[in-house]
Image 1 (cartoon, rainbow, N blue to C red):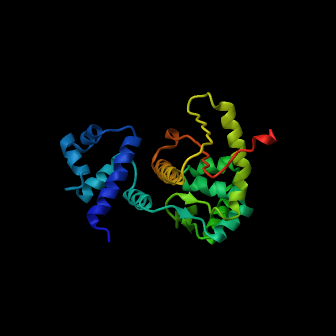
Image 2: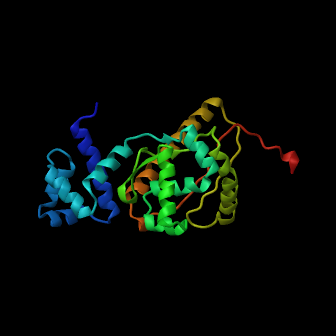
Length: 247
């Protein structure tokens, strides 16, 4: 069972990351709180920090303490895999899936409504649909609370994933055209290796995938909209031998 100290440390980690995301340093916070930078460092060590100081830091960062606590809780959760009901619904309503991901990534509602050309009534209908399949709870005044946490994962044996096949091919074509541009990477290799080394590489790749999704989830949750950009990666590793006789 987690202790209160562990909860405080998780909250402080969120505050540290938010501080960096705002382009601020301990010295800025020290000036705002009228304390020394050494004291700020001591506060962030989690040894002696009061609720008053936590609230003051949140106010300085323009973020509510409840939001910080929620983020700290979410970041501790593992990936959330869509249920069969949710997967089936999104397979039929693919645009609703993309809209939900926009919400889950904390995109401003005004931007979401403008991009998807939604009025208040249509936006509220989407919220009700997401509520029916257990992804969020609709609150008064078109507010909502997510009932899931952690990076969202699509079932590999579900129906929704089929819609990604075509997008993956389009993405690969785009990468091949842009491979010489900065920030674009394409590597492919077909080799003969032992089963032991193949298993070793697979484990390392799986660890990297989890790290990628975890870092992406933190950035989506904490960074300001102008500090983020959309990226995509496509990774494949499988026993395979090219049949060059087809060329």
